[in-house]
Image (cartoon, rainbow, N blue to C red):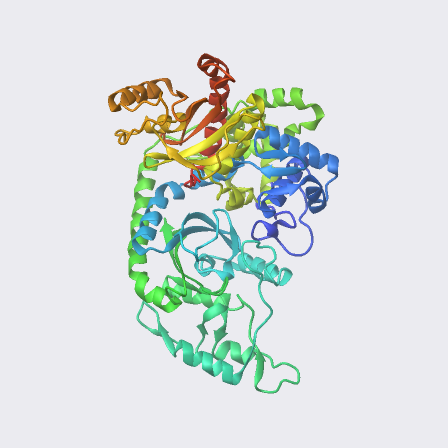
Length: 630
């Protein structure tokens, strides 16, 4: 089987390390539909999760009929949703990135450390891994401010414009440096990295300007690792990636006709090799506004078995810290956090060595693909569905799999699994060494960035719409805030007599079906100030507590004209992955539409099925991140 096959051309738009120049040869055994399907997913990711089908046709160069078949297959898989003429990424696609994150182990082991550090420092903290000549985020603990970090899990950044980049580059060899130089030459403005602003043209300073800049930053900075000074006259990286000093000044050509007072400084990142050497010596690195003005970061590597497993960064804004202040103030605390993370990894490694390796149960793919083929006919591309399933064979305790194990986990024939692995390796999503395969960080580029900011309301919205269309009644999503419910999702009907409530509306929880299914999950629900809103409103605390006990046991609430005369509602709780109730969905109607008994026999089964689909999406989306409720 081919090993370390170069990635396909054009992958620089969503992954690092694409080789500039001639196209990489596609292996003879590669699965063409899988290559095309991944191209569609990448284009949707680059388009922030939504694109028209005609737009996909233009951006991929595929025939419209091919785009239609690919999106139909992805929709059947639950990875996209077809909304009229648009294709929209769906939360279930995140199971591909989840497979990589689970196999990596780092989010499970280190996320809590990063979150605690962010809470303590009141600054954003991120974890990143190297992705060839870029870095990719695997966790973000972001502070909510007017000026806050906008990077998402899975976002790819050029290594030279970040603080983690020089640290990862300390482990590069000649081949990695050559690839970095080729990419810089082929993409001089970093257009292949949509998550960052484009690199600007080279900046010109006169000698007086340069002297002013030197005076501003000071003559030296201290290497905190060994206590020695790094003198400006030798080489010093300053704000926005510019390096001043002997080495670059000597090589900097004068502009034609400009005279001695005008010289051209390097563009952002041209001092990367110097920054890497400094990071190797210091053991930490700074980003002084390399990505955009105002953004500063301090980074340190987290090592496992002597190699960099990930890099943790504290990120701030110049209104709060200068880069030097960030280093001087926070470096000691960051060192402590890194030491704790490395202890966590050592302990986990010891525990894992004593734990038998897990074997994934067959995925049931054959049955599913057979049913899909029967339903969609030629519109269903079986080889695409099979190839994407290979990615989900990996996971926690299954970071490295051989061909036989992949075939067993997916239920595919060895020959079919082998061709899928060859294709994924060619595209850079899998690496192979000694007949063992591993997922690469590039898998996070398949939809994870735009989907990683999806809220519960956004996850639920298409499901609420479908339910309302089936029942021809109003459907709502709400969360509990104290002793009130707040509507966060809503689909209304166009009846003359219908329930009209807007998103953001707050109501008391106790007389509503939505409120009762959420109150029932609390150990001590607030049952004070029970006012009679209608003649049927329950206001006795003991009686209401008995009602909540029954709601908890039955798993739903039916409220009949207690909030408003003529209003009948049935609700079901929405639970997160751990089983805690985080929201509720209801169907509301005028009491003349259905009897209470018909609400239970006709509406409740449909409502439960809808909530089940919402929970499936929520559990996938929330496996490695906190899903905002609103």
